[in-house]
Length: 273
Image 1 (spheres, helix red, strand yellow):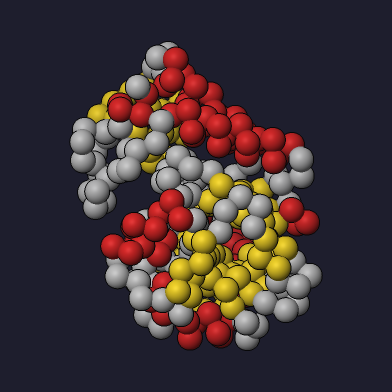
Image 2 (cartoon, one colour):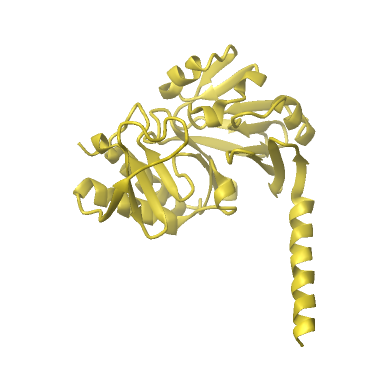
């Protein structure tokens, strides 16, 4: 019986590995791209950033561009041959690092200074609340959710119940300590809005660092984040410690980290004033 169980375990593990491998459509030392669902692919970089490719009947959309992915434009062309538009969820370099491979990019004007500071020479197209990327049989809608950065947006595929959130709603940890700062009330407002969207047919959130989770986040996550943010605002959060990180710009100005169960908010105390 023990031998049988071991054999069955091996077969199941092999089957799971085969399925995972079959979903993979591209890989090099910097980037792995896998099919997430029909006409949607996910790119995961070697430094744990995420990008998404959504293909419609007429156009395709690249959401975020990662940090260093040599010849990203040519790599995307291995996935789709449709006319391509590129949008970044916000201006941080781990999401805009490869926009230089593309002649134009869409973004919110709130993060313009960040992108200009990175030396981008292409055309910048501004999007705001309600803008729709019409891909043909697929419509991707912009929702403005400042907090992580002044120009953070999320992208909604209402017909398929999906949200692509960048770092507005990140894995198990949201960063609100990076300059320029937004008040905690902005993040609370964003969480409440996302919960309303979930209740109205968008239950899945694919975040900007999906590699840490390997699954979409949803209502339970958003409810916890809203609760923790409100506790910070009200001064009732209990598990607060100094935040330490080796990531560039992550630990300056003495940030703190507030935790609750399996989620956390990293923040500059100034956002509570």
